[in-house]
Image 1 (cartoon, rainbow, N blue to C red):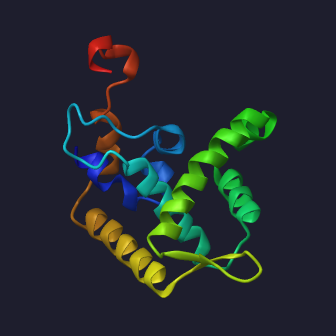
Image 2 (cartoon, one colour; image 1 turned 45 degrees about the vertical axis):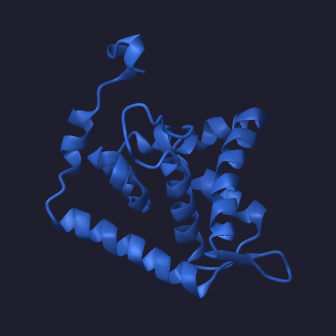
Length: 160
């Protein structure tokens, strides 16, 4: 629960060293089940929305440029580039995150269809990064996170 409720703020490139499962879990996962948690089901989309805001903080991008940056930073970029279906899958996941950012008023498209952070989006991103820093400063030990995760192969099928 602790990992899931805080994972949407770990959007920096170095965060992969803290959470190696980010490359799999949050780039490909579906909404969470309500069965065992009262957390938001859409934490993966929230992560992707926050991730997009972090990319857009440096400059406006077209949707294609944004997706290219996402793939470029992805640990499995070489595999993604090999298969059209994988590119479409990753693209669809991040388009859903982008739709969330647009719907929340965190991002807008200018007259040339480039994606920009709104003032609200920039402030929201700053709050996300501040929360991330606060979690790390409180003594959150990322090395322990990997020990807390049980591989799916070891979890009885009824618990997956």
